[in-house]
Figure 1 (cartoon, rainbow, N blue to C red):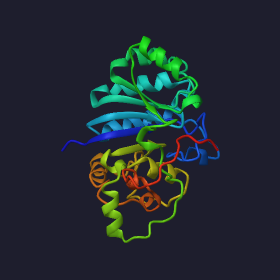
Figure 2: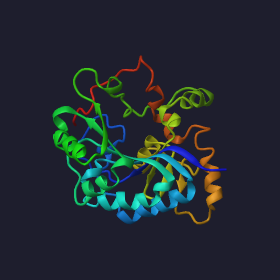
Figure 3: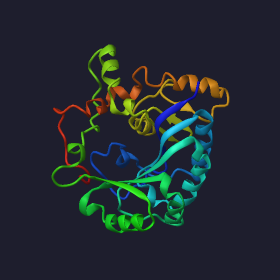
Length: 266
């Protein structure tokens, strides 16, 4: 049986140009933000494409990925596996422009890339420059407005208050089955571990939840075969994970949940 997923994000950095109060990736909570070492990123990519036969969206996320001077080299390495993914999606807040060989490499692979810009108005100070450069180089992009009226998805939800879920296990299981992260199969890879979603990834890396072996796959574990890891993947979304008990993503589509202006700075 082939192993396929909709989205898989590679976390390139916990450094960011912004400090958003309600950051869904909890980036401001990292006391010593850092770029993920290049060697770890390429190792993770190698292991991931041993596990997966196909990925719809291979995402590059942070933090702010364009802070990396080696972003071009990372993109180029990932495209070794182009036969195994449909589109590379790169997330940015448009506060910095691609560095090093970044834009040249993006131009080379433009038809297979999508730059997703979170537009925070005045905070996204390089948006116009970035859009012009992307257009000139025929690189696809999408802009999501997160300022003023009519913010994308009505703004952000507050997922920073980690009050434990008070309901029963069956109720939590029912709620998390509808979670957008589950529906999107939004897996995240960070430092040799593969997590089922962004919240599981970042809260585990911060030590804010006590993840068990059922909550992630150790990509570097040679005591478990590739087929055994694939078997774990097949059950990734059947039950709630440790992070689900302190997460509110499952409320994301609830029209009654309070929305907040995006990117309010600490």
